[in-house]
Amino acid sequence: MLSGRRYRLELTAEQAGQCEEFANVCRAVWNTGLEQRREYRRRGAWMNYVPQAAELAAAKREHEWLKAAPSHVLQQTLRDLDKACRDHGTFKVRWRSKSRWAPSFRFPDPKKISVERLGRKWGRAKLPKLGWVRFRWSRPLGGEVRSATVSRKGGHWFVSFLVDDGAVTPERHAMPNTVVGIDRGVKTAAVTSDGDFHDREFIRPGEAARYRRLQQQLARTRRGSSNRRKVITAMGRIMTRVADRRGDFCAQTAAQLVQKNALVVLEDLRTRNMTASAAGTPVEPGKRVRQKAGLNRAILDKGWHRLELALTNAARYTGTPVVKVNPAYTSQRCSACGFVTENNRESQAVFRCKAPACGHHEHADGNAAKNIKAAGHAVSACGDLGTSRSVKQEPVGRATGRTPS
Image (tube, rainbow, N blue to C red):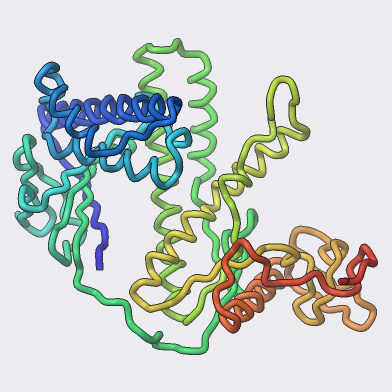
């Protein structure tokens, strides 16, 4: 099974300059290749990896600066571009902006990568054109190296090794017939149908106050100035620590959930669509833009999508299927009697069933998690219906008074 191992690099000034140069060349190749593909699509034609790789080889004979980066690194950039265009569409793939893109590049050939351990805390790796680079040995490799990716984050360079750890997905979970539904929220990151609340504060109050001051300072700096770069670097260091805490929380929570449950059920939430700006266009501006912006920040801060990715990754080692169900009415349906009305949810945290013969009440997120679990049972019993088809029907007696035809 393929898995990633990331380590912090300790580069010399010369090696750091080389990494910056490699990343800039890869960014130029990506943007040029993307523009070429878009131009071909505008004319009704298609450009793929093979002719672009041939043109890259010809371009290297004319432009010396392309020779700064290893050839297979540039070829890998074109392969990544080809995959992105095929998966998402040529016009939906983003440009790699110098100011917004985190520099990175990949060495895809394991035969050109060597890794050695120097001691308890240090190791080193031999990478093409970079030579031997030192890194902090924070965890064992645990497998055969398949590729290496060098990236910069928060002012530091890191190397990520893709390794084959030899693990195999088990055919049967250690605790069969166990199911959990997970409701992701903006107050609590994840609430399970078992009544467990998983949450953590990712940014500390002092860091939040410092980040606000840096934002104010950034607004007073001049574009392109050295002071502006210093402020952006300081803001990046804070957000890097926040992102690392969020990733650690998602990984630990996911590991606990898949170890205890043979089936994990999530709502099929389109996070990118849900966090789109409400500003609209200048011609048709949106409504309640500031409120929507606050909701977007809360959703992104809780790491909904990152938790989903962590669950999918951890589930490979336990054999736990991760099922996504339609989120319709999960927050309005009573988990005890099935009655649905928007009035059932009295507040963000309080759920009280309005059915005359029920009166069930509990935490609103816990009730939603139980409904998600029930929907997952329906999917597992009938087969995976796909997330585009609802596994729940609007019940009789909804607040509108309509009955199913």
